[in-house]
Amino acid sequence: MSLKSNIQITFNNITKKKAASIQSALEPDNVNFPKGLSFEIKSIDNKLVFNFQCIGDTRKLAATVDEVLEHVKLASEIIE
Image 1 (cartoon, rainbow, N blue to C red):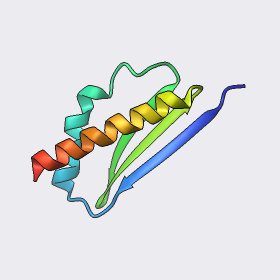
Image 2: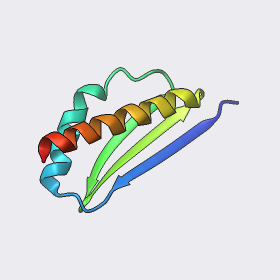
Image 3: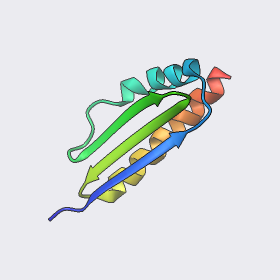
């Protein structure tokens, strides 16, 4: 039986324009994920919600979360 892990990260008080810009910036990276790893972004009201799911190696999950957060930080800095 493989370990199944879920991580949800929510950014609050974010404008719809900024949320859409961050989503657009991350879309090219949201392809060809390793087997057992998935990532979804949703914009809900004034929140940007990231859902990560991993079946198996949680190191892949941690590395992916770290990489996505770095990209969010960079995109946020460019937008402002």
